[in-house]
Image (cartoon, rainbow, N blue to C red):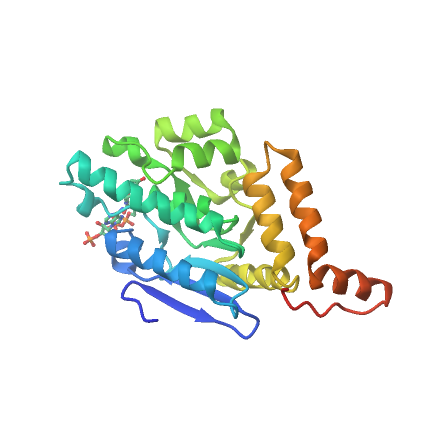
Length: 256
Ligand code: CAA
């Protein structure tokens, strides 16, 4: 499918690289981008040829510099509610996908941009990345899930400091605080994220999907992991994975 605001390429290993393509506006998320992101993630999740997704921003300056302020400026409370619902549901869809999604933050990830990155499984960032939730400086608060996603990721105290001040932090501080997993030179960022995505793809899909589900939904419910673990024993991938180990060969997973 062709998109107005997104670029999409999938390599032979089934790793899709999705780029938000509004570099003149620092890839700000307007209603059109949000709609296309939702459609693109739905299509990627249901495409059996796609094993994992890397999302990044076009251009050298920004991953996403936030929700589109010019579009939000004149919104009524009801319009703002609908805009936030659309953003929140798109981001929740990413968290609920069966496939890993890695954010490759190649510059500014502010407001809705950081929220989008936080909705992904984990974040790799360039050395020049700048991250923050500056919404209070605009007289609002994060609207796509930033308050609770950040608090869940790094704890309430650090989330409060970032959200109340709106301050922007660099990649080093973001890594120290547990927002970013890896920091890379800008030129290596997407390649490194694609390599990690390819490692997850080797597992054939079912086990990684179960792991994603367990971490997303089982943190408060220990038996949830047990249920997912046991269901995997009804799959060919489990038999193949363990048989391959005993036969000292690489497994040939079929995702079934
Ligand atoms: N929305 C709309 N347009 C944006 C934008 C945004 N979030 N961020 C940048 N742009 C536009 C600028 O208006 C500018 O457009 P023009 O060339 O037409 O003037 C263009 O992108 C380039 O930006 P700058 O000239 O400002 O670039 P800079 O290098 O001087 O500054 C920046 C970069 C510090 C990221 C600055 O652009 C900035 O502060 N942007 C806004 C960041 C922000 O507040 N984000 C949070 C938005 S609110 C939100 O996201 C709510 C939510 O949770 C749902």
